[in-house]
Image (cartoon, rainbow, N blue to C red; front, side, top):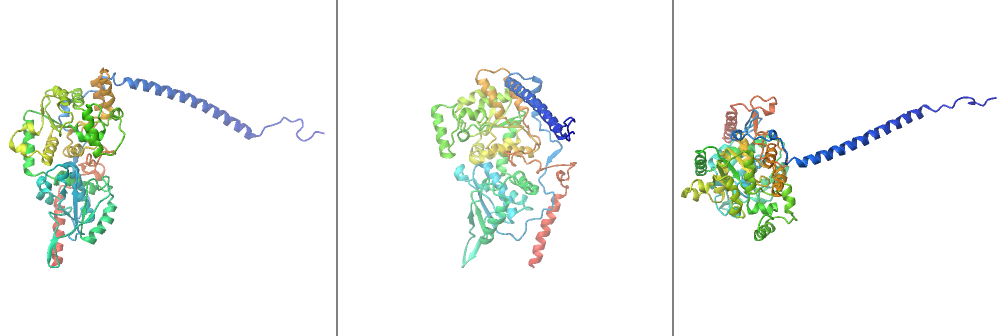
Length: 518
């Protein structure tokens, strides 16, 4: 008798074959993965090898620069500047929460951004802004102050729909004596959030009647998720802050003399002791000059171990005057180009300017354009910086040579964008560094085409997305721009009668206050 299962073929369970098939598939996938990895490694080696050749061998068709087109404004893409409110924007309340005083430290343009932030802070807290104080003595050693630089009446009138502004903190009478109201002093955190102003600062303001924020450089966050607040900053920066008439007349006079002979290009040549010390770029200077730079860095900046070759390779060093000239020449500008230099005292002296001057002999600054007594008497300290600012703003092309931590260059780039997409040439120092280094090593083949190829990837002044670390004051697009026929309702220009609407609201607010007081 057969036992159960005897004489029958042994059959494996179904799951065995299923697992076996899956194992085969895994092996096939592994083989394919290995082949893919090998191919990727080969491609990486291939591209790395040829990318090292790219600096020398470049197709001319890919690196053409139309210099004649650069003299015109950049393509607007259908956008135009507009910082007027586009949503409900009530006038400042007649019932203020108190007075806001600020002390704006730093140079002209650092102070300018601080003034914009002060106006916005006053709006946020429903405060009355006391005309901002400019810390002129410690930085510029002059006493121009706000009243000496800006048109005060225009400033107050321009912002009447936004904040209440007074020229000085009011006097109070107490115990039979009259004295100025004392403001409670606070030190705001750097890049403070709006919530700090609506809590800590506002509480102290309500408690004391006035607060004094000092120092006030970079004391309000730049990126704010409220387009109307950002547009207020633009109204302050590009409309309310107007230099005094004699500064405007002086600037326009210089521009007229420069333009009488055709187009002109302005350059902010940031090859100065403070910036070179900050960047840690010492090795191109003499031992004595290096000693001066190291001493200045030790006294003014944090102690860091900076290696020149490493800093240079990643584009952290300001361009030398010669490098600036080489970039311009590679782009097609010739020795007939008229150039206005906005710069302080160049470190290292004339020997660094000689190569640049040999390429572009038609160099001017605010002292050489007009040597009259009026000009020489009004171009010192903040006044000189203000004149340089206006000439660079009105120039056909503007070129900053170190727009990293430079408030002058960054503010001008933003102002020229808002002023009608005026052309800017912004050297990509990181992209240019290996090209310059190769040239210094004796390999100059294809140099100019390599420079053009890098420069063609940069933005020449048209609307573009703001990407960190780019500042709002460098690029206020899209908040402070609009389109007449935009598909996105948020981008459409406000109605033409918007100013009349704001005026009616302000009059209505004042009428209500008068009626309630009777």
